[in-house]
Image (tube, rainbow, N blue to C red; front, side):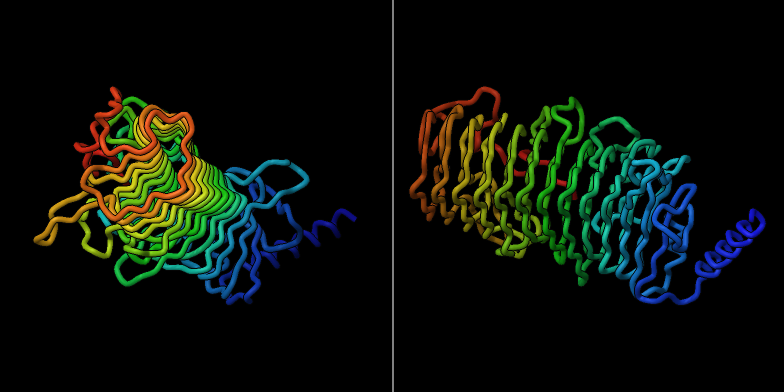
Amino acid sequence: MRSERRFKFSCLGLLVLIALSGRAFSSDTYVVVGPTYNCVGHYAWVPTINQALAAVKGAKKAVIAVCPGTYPEQVVITQQNLTLVGVADTYSHDSAVIMPPATGSVTNTVDLDTGLNIAAQILVQNATGASISNITIDGTGNGIGDCNTDLPGILFQNASGTVNHVVVQNQIPGGSLSNCSTGESVYVQTSTGNVSTVTVENSLLQNYNKNGITGNDPGTTMTLSGNYIVGSGVVSGGAVQNGIQLGYGATGKISTNTVSDNNNDGPPYAADILLIDTAENGGISVSNNILSNSQLPLGLETDFANGPSEYGDGVTVTGNKVFGASIYDGIDVCTNGNKVTTNLILNSAESGVHLDASCGATYGGGTLFTGNNNTLTGNTMEGGSCAGILEDTGTSGNSIVSENYYAVPLTLTSSTSSCPIATGPAHTKAKTALKFSPKK
């Protein structure tokens, strides 16, 4: 019996080797990755994710199922329609965790906008239909010792796909929080003429050095929903963290996320959600999120540096719960033509909603202004140190109706001199370049 069993196992091993020999695969190619065993049945099995990627090369559609265990490797996905999914088993009751290699992370691409080296833990590049789910990506032990190499947990470059039920954590170059503008949980970039459409949902993003989620560039569209994004609180001398950033021509939908604890000892200031020079009238919506315990929970900003297609106007902000703005306003509106409706804003250090003229600039031979032509309807402001709504002197065309104020010192004012805040800057002197620190 034992000889017969060994013979059967030998035959199975031979079949696995044949299956992994590089021949063309069918559209339902399925390979299992596991440290010492195949946890889901008699499928082709390899010990590393990169071996599995090599095995499915050329498949029209492939699934790589990752058994519980630790995988010290950087993963580069260029395959179309690839699913990378962690699977459970009845043996270890553990999870699949991708860690940096034992010798440290190395550069595997460059930043499309800055040329900075990037050592992504998972890089999805020039591919569509990528799906990453049920996996932890942990940056502990990355070994990066300077500010010249970025460390994203997941990076999409000219690529599209979905991130669902993942944990991305400890993207901190060198392992200690620093003032390097590097280290993001999820990062999406698009070069000129390309498209990146990425959904991030139902995921936990925490202990990042710079940003939780960043989506930059024209051609980038992000759908972000149901995520928990947790900053590191106040870190003296650390990078200015932002929970979610859309910027520089990007667009998307941000809904039902919980974002908190993005702080800094600045200025500049940290934001739970920062929209900076997003696509002009790009249909961006920020809805039904919970934003808390940051310096400025939500900022709609422009610096006019990227031309009229990236002024960031025309955003819809509705149904959000915003509380605990520790330095600034609950919602800072430093662009034009936005709709801010039915938000609940509690206990802001300055105003609940600020219609902010301070981002205005001379551009293209003329002067451009901000804080204008916005519609505010049905928002509720409760508590706080200054005003329900601060409408800067010089703004115009704003419609403010049916607002609700409770225990607010001033309901509507146009001057911070009416209720000065010792810990915050004068709004009229706070320019975008100093107010925030976006990832670019």
